[in-house]
Length: 356
Image (cartoon, rainbow, N blue to C red; front, side, top):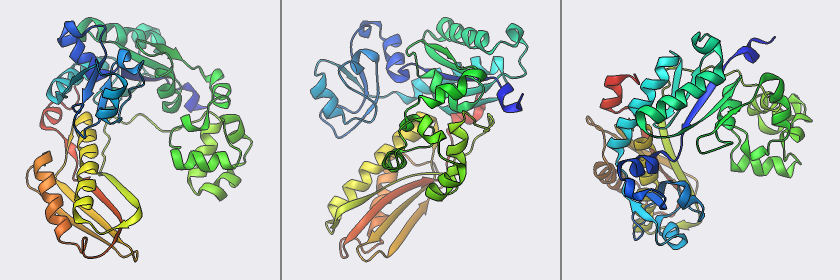
């Protein structure tokens, strides 16, 4: 049997993590719609909504004002990232009891490779069940688990029966499962690629499988090799205990060129807020901020500033204002503008625990 098919991978995903922590810490919220994120009258976005709130169509990254219109009686709560970080450390400590190969993806999800585990006679399903029970008993929260022979399928499986689910996709089931999968659910296929694939008649895994690897490479470049593997239910990526992300960025191309410096500044602030939310969710901090400007004539410039101390939101906004002032934005029409945060590192609390 292929070595990749012999792997035992578990993906653990906490259920509505931030909102669940808030309900746990304030039992009076139980059974009520809870939205963690920006205030309803702000320009903030939803970080997490519990399942009661999701019934009204509220979801992550939605503007808080829109969430309020959908459910005005929901409880809107400002995020408490220190509290979520503390709970995350407890969850990660539980995962490390069962495997040395734990790859955190954010504060509330991680992969484990239990291929060599001896607990529960090496049964990945029983290990996943034990992890879920430990989380309920010790952290008083629920998690969903996906079990499979690779990361791609394990992550898909964990989202299939939320909340508090446990789904297993066995090696002999993987190829058939992928054939029925909508193309937009494939790992690494974003909205733009999904749209391009659908124009080519690729709507499901079965459609993708009918394309040769060479044909996929011709249309999608090197990514075609990856898509061909996924179509067969294959994903050779190992679980990596230590992952490094060098940067996190965001940008937008305007429908019409912009000359108003205030509009440009507000757009940069909006992008920065999204990026800072992602950093906080993943327990990261940043030291360098870069502003990217592409003028109407397609000339592109970047301006960067590296700080000695980790950037908070206020200092990051100040840096953006100074960097934008060092460009010709406002004097020349701007076609595209973006922000990148780099020099990323774990927050001090996470670095001290090394995800124990």
